[in-house]
Length: 295
Image (cartoon, rainbow, N blue to C red; front, side, top):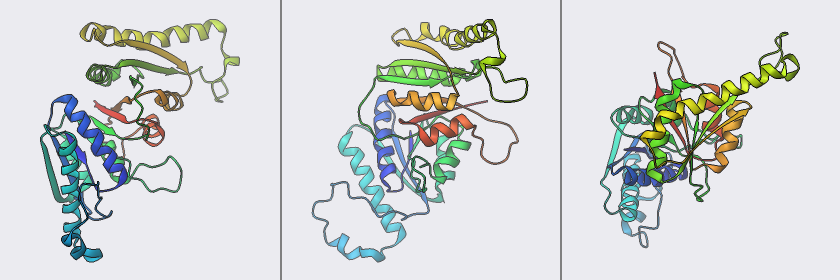
């Protein structure tokens, strides 16, 4: 497993989350810090008793490398103190943070990053590194959002169609590891008005709406059916809502420990490869968001 670390408070939350996930998976943890170094002062996790002469000697003029090295040492010690049996490897690189995380994530069971944004809009807190990694990751990625420590005992997965099978299996595996229930949520819409306006019940008969709802209910039910036998210990609930998917999933994330989404890729497309629903969750979800790349 891999976690990105830059010394910021969101990175510390990501570090703690990643360590817990590594223990659940019985995996080792690599802590990656890429350039630029020293954007944040090295955190003091309460591990250094009284500071010491070396800290005083460094002062505000210490090198970027020294500051980053100290932050990594403290981060490693924090994890080893909390999880003494977890194998931890710090990796400080001159590679850009996003490139380093994408490279390491190719062979990792999971990559974890924090939000680390400093935007002026409340809730829009996804930093550029996290956004780049989310857009281009080739392995599972968790962006650690939310601040509540309470556990709800629920893994939430947003299911658009049977093309999201990889994300659904990942969600089953996550629920099994956590001993949690699984909620499979599918959102659907009324058909668009003939005039091109917004969807409305006025332009559809009750029979049409009932047929649409029945079809929508079948999506999560049939997608989850083959996995119920593979994961008999997971309590599964399938839901459908007539609402925009982004709004429905953000609202549902209030009662989830993690939300899982499929990240669909488009070949030869330049720039960021994230859809509006993924953007909404990465910026507004109330719990960590796990993206599972899907061809």
